[in-house]
Length: 264
Length: 340
Image (cartoon, helix red, strand yellow):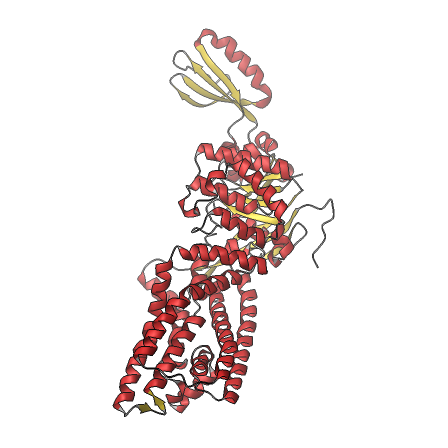
């Protein structure tokens, strides 16, 4: 499997190299939203004397920069890609090979993240300097962040695959994807850090998987959680990931029975 | 644990294979569209209706039928892409739709109108990915690629991005990609679709040579009868999902078209030739006559003798295979007695 991944990585890097500008543009596009919310919360915080619900202007900046990095590292577009592949008849050639189609997506996803990570960090550095961010974390926040971001990326990816399998039944899943994105927008800590949300929304947020993809690793990275809570979050992420994998395996097997191999 | 195929077992073994698609149905117009939002109507389409056949190792079999006959659906079931609605099948001893690794490594499905290569990179790089996916040993990979490069004249094409290749060039690299792992069974679905005459010939020669060299079992669909005539001694004909004929191509011609076609070119205008056989076409100085196979020699000799100097040219041949196949389709019933 290592040899397969190595060769897939080489091929994907070669393919991606031809679309460098597009990759960077997508990356820049993805950071617009957190930057807008950062600017808005900075204005609110300044108007309220430098703090909102315990979050200082610098905390907001740290949170949204962390959210930008986390968003980048956990983004997964495999459900969009999958629908496209099914409709274009491109899934069939992959199904004919002794390698699960999921592996191609993993490599594609990794290559995009790695190749656009450096420009992303430069943009984040500029934002950090502009908003005079002060990191208030401990060393163990960084240690917790590593497994947290891996679990979050895997969870996001597997949610993408669960949604992708809906293509077997629905053929078009744009609306499902849009619904998921809107839900994530509300409950994943994109509008505001979860601690600033009304209690009811917080309860819902912690009961759904979306915060475990974005808000939670972002809070860990900015140093906004205690060690005990951080560890609890990791457990929550692991549970959601396990659930997503089980759901995916079930949906994939059932979906293949429905697959009509149209257009191929 | 994978099933073990006995030495004499067929490589492809299909028994009462059936596939029913459920498709949504609605009338045309906006009102019908709105109604379909509330109450959706489904219709069952029987694509493959209980077909049975076996293919032995090394055979090249033509799988014929008009559009919508169920050929591609059958190939998709046999390559593990589709689950059947009923019946059984094994390919190389495996149930295809279980998609076991050993099965996938042992077969290939090549579709003339579909690409399996990455468009943005040269084929040579895609081949390296396939080498690892199929776990092809280095020496075998080099040998197979050299052989395929030689047979298909791939040399100049391997290092160009696939998107820059012409249709014919792309088809050649697609063939190589599909055969790099030396599959024991190859399902070829319209492999010469859209190719010019010269490239069709090239692909045909390649398939024949590949079968000869590797001993691979090949099931081929094509609308170009030249493909079938050049490659397949045996054909399986299906129509509306039902198997109509399974046997030798030559026998099919004799059974469905028990006549020979005599074409004559005269120096003057064609007169009444109906005493020689059934005149199927007549145009100024050209005429085509169908005569019973057994009497072809005698009728030809009579024509030569009786027309004398009037006769500029004469040829005797089997009817075109397209005509024969059309007759099978038109019969729409299995030629049971031919399928011994």
